[in-house]
Length: 414
Image (cartoon, rainbow, N blue to C red; front, side):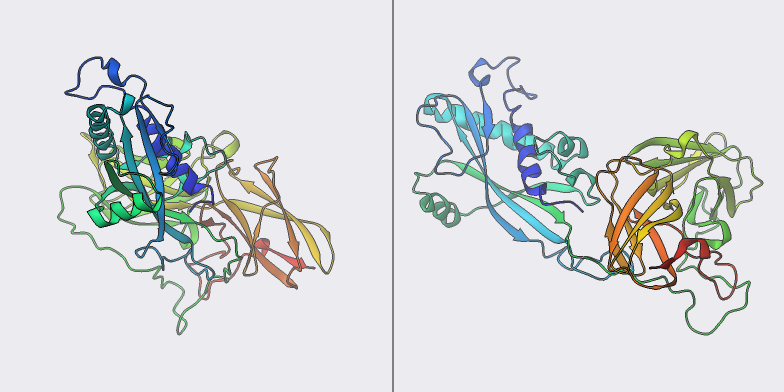
C-alpha cells in the first residue's frame, strides 16, 4: 500500500510518459519536426490551453476519483483488524492541441499518445519511482497500477466541457487503477494462536492446506516450505526445507528474488530426495543482502536444468530487545534487527496487539527506536517487528505440543 502522495505520483508518471510523444513510433517518419515541441501538461480544462501558446500540446486532466469496488473490502495483514486501505480508481481525460490550433497535428499527437498508453498499460515501478512527487511510495505497492481506456459517451463528454465553460475539443478518457492508500489509524495485531481445538500428539503438525503434486509429473515442483522447528518463515543463518516432487536431481540451485535486492543463488549440497530439499540461508556480509520480507523462489534441478514453479517464501527478521527510559505513561524501546532495515522498507513494532511506528529518521538500520505511549503492563509483554508485512518469529517451536512463545521476544513493562 502507499501514502497520500500516490494520486499525484500517478498523474506525474503518465505525464512524463506522454512528454515523449514527439519521439517517432513504428510507422512514423524517421524525423517529425512538426511535433518536435510537443509536451504534456496537467491542467483543468478551463485553463488547459494558454491562448498565447501556439505549440503542440497534450493535456492530462484528472476529472474524477472513485472508490474501487474490487478492493474496497480487501483483507489486511492476516490476523489484523482496523481501517481498510483507501482503494481508488482515477479517471482522466486526454486532450490534444495542435500548433497554431491545427487539428491535423492534434489528431496525429492524439493517435501517438493513445498507442503509447496502450503499449504501457501497466505503470512500472521504475516509472513510479522517477516521478517528480518526492516521498511517494506507490512504487512499493504490491498491486500493479494499470491504465485502460474509459469510454465517454457524447452526453458525458459534453457535460464535462460545458461545466468548464469551454468549447468541446476531441478528447479520450482513461481509467487508472488501483491506488491503495494506507490508513493512518492504528491497527490491532493479536498474538498468534498457539493451538486450535483439542491437543494433538507431539509429532502431529498441520501448518495449513497443502497442495499435493502429481508425483508422475516430469518437471520438479515446489508445494510449500518450512523453517527450522516447523516455523512458517525462514531466517538468515538457518535451514529451510522445501517440499514438492521430482526434486531429486543434481545439481539443484535455488534463486531467491526480492524487489529491493539482487537475486541470490544458493546451491545445496544437503542430502535430498524427490519429495524435499533442505538448504541453509547463508550469513552474508552485514546481513543486508537478505532484506526481510517476501521472496519469490524458483529452483533449477538437474542437468540440463528443469525449472520449478515459483513459491512465495517469507524471510523474517531476527530481533533483540532493549528497553530504555520508561515510566507508567511512556517507554522507549530499541530493536536490534538482522538483516538491517532498508530505507524503502516499512517497519512497525507490534507490542501486545498495538502497532507502533518507528522514530524517524532511522539513522542505524540495525537498531530501530520506538516510543510507546501508555504501554501495556505485564511480565512479559511480547513484541514483534514487522518489516514489509513479515513479522519476527514469536513462537519458539511449532513441533512441540502445545507450542509456546519465545521468552526472549518479551520484556516486562512498564
